[in-house]
Image (cartoon, rainbow over all chains, first blue to last red; front, side, top):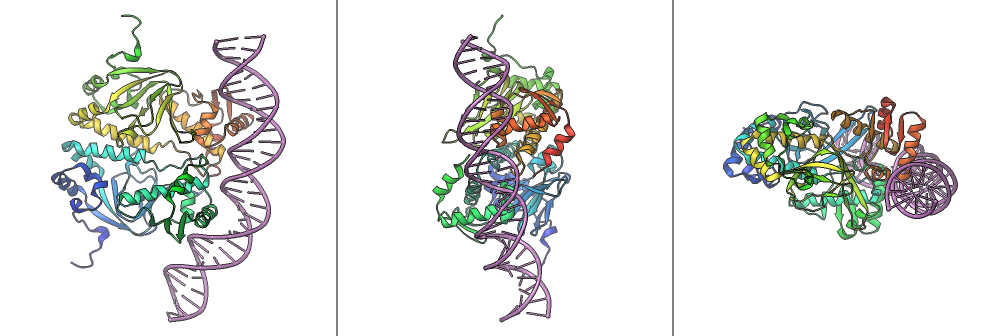
Length: 239
Length: 239
DNA sequence: CGCCCGGTTGACAGATATCAAGCGTCGTGG
DNA sequence: CCACGACGCTTGATATCTGTCAACCGGGCG
């Protein structure tokens, strides 16, 4: 059955062999419990760059686990100005903030062609009643998201914000087995600026400065953190 | 048994009659289930202005429910500069972000004499295994906290940040049955500034401007929101 | 009564936004 | 395969917001 369209393929997931399972819901579950979890994950979905995974105020049905690729979550205000509330990469989960209000408080847009597991939350909750560890695992993952808060320190200087942002990304890549020193940014300078609360031009100037100071080497969206220690220092200054 | 010291009194809580129960864990529970919950809440604790409810990196044992008063959560960096990550008032819960890391990522300090219920998290989780609704309720409350994120939009102007802050506080007071138009701020101008990422002097100037524009009347920490509509407009501008 | 601290107001400086121009890169289509 | 166009990125000049420094005011508390 070649050429099957992945975007609507109701395939069974294989969480037990997924390289990201230790970051995801199966973390604390046994192989059997994980299999039960797989059964409720109806399909794998592929979204292309610029596509919406969900829109602002869409009714909440699914938690999404990112298998590959990356997303930004954002909402545009009445004047059409966009604010970006966060970036999400593989192994991260999207949608927890929609549970209470029963709708997504932000839209999620793919930054590149990405693949996600769509997890029906009602089924997940139901399964949690027979596997209490699953509920406990959800709570733990939500707590992790709350403590690893992707927040921009409003007291920090533009440079401190950017340095902190790069270090945060670095740590996230490292957890996924990628190099913490060398990685590719999936967002534009403008998107970084919107998220960090600084102008695109300033972001660009800061990258130039990091380059001349031999702290970060950057070519297009490829970056190499040459001096993590110095970056660490910069991320704390001017708070 | 008169004059018993409340701070160490192992009294049984009475969640069923607590006026804040509809904002707290008992929300979706039956009277019987709530009674089971009451039994694990070991004691009520009173903390005075400036006292720490918990310190940064304290081992995580308890979720705290604020019965009365208010808190700030903050962490000080290596240079001794304090950043405030949020403010918490009665009916709100503290500590969810400590579950994953098993320690509190921020300290919590009372802004005024306050009273809290101390909820042992291990017992709570255990109880959740017999009352799945309780787990579901915890997840819902955590989601609520994630969506009502007390975040400062780093793209917003100083005025927009302050206006947004006042409106957020107003809405939180309203949910608790207090007036959304007239309330008392429990934090100093300096603390507001630290949280919002603006200088104390700027906060003061902004209050003066709101006063002359007849949008907010303020006397010391008592504020009256005279023109909520205009405040709403200000909170969106310059983003 | 006087000190102290939080708050207010003013003058000035500096960081960053804005406006503007130019450049490089990538993708498209001939 | 090459040329073109568009977009993202970079760099420069100027404007503006907000931080910093400083002085002063006023209430609360000892």
